[in-house]
Amino acid sequence: MSIFVDETTRVLVQGITGKEGSFWTKHMIEMGTQVIAGVTPGKEGETVEGVPVYHSVARAQRASGEHAADAAMLFVPPRFTKDAVYEALDASIQKIVTIADGIPLHEQIEIRAAARSQGAQVVGGNTSGVISPGKSMLGIFPYWIQRVYKPGRIGIMTRSGSLTNEVTAMIVEQGFGVSTLIGVGGDPVPGTRFAEFLAQFEEDADTDGVVIVGELGGTMEEEVAEAITEGRFTKPLVAFIGGRTAPKGKRMGHAGAIVTGSAGTVLAKAEALTKAGALVADRPSQVGTMLRTRIPETR
Image (cartoon, rainbow, N blue to C red):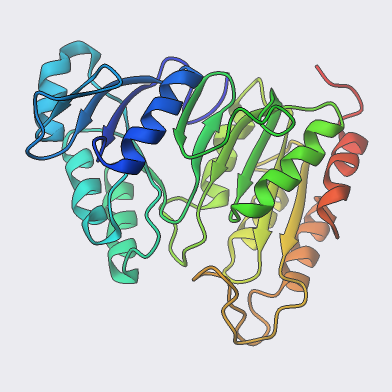
């Protein structure tokens, strides 16, 4: 198994006819993703990689009937993202991924609230998406890099794009592979937070442990520590947290990567996770070996 997406997930792509939408739809299909429909207003009747295009999500869902999409992948500019998410939610789609970078903060808050009110999960913005290697992908991952995107039994959650490949390569080097990798995104208000995915990884029989790639700012890593302490997550967990040398009060790359006072520091996050029983790596190269100490044998 995996979480969020697998080979049975039926995907609708919003913004499918654009440059990024068409390019990554091709790669999603090549990896095995079931892309059943696309949406671009005014483009109904066209096809992209053999996928029919419709004016709206509602029209696509009606045309698909009992095989309607249960997940949406958004290649939509930031200023249109909220409306695109709402359109997917109105069509009862429960899993939504948006890669847009620069969604206005107040709209991030509204997107998260709307999704939670309907029991849906939004991944992003400012993310590479979600991938269950060898099964399905909603996003923009170079899945063809086998030393990184190898199928396996380790769940990964990350706030960083560039660090993800490096850390995951270290995991694969130790003989592990990936069940599902989720880029929660680097914005201050992600659609879904680390701790909100932990229950799914806990329940997934094919995930033996979890790695989180965090960074300074916010409280997502501390929420993971709390989940471990309260017994809501019991599998092995290893973390790497970027931003140890960042100056206080200065945003570092991502909108969510900022330290204010003593809150959001790498040290505070590392202390909370260590106290909860997780392992915290000082360098990406240590993640795989630390994971091996907790999972001696690979199934």
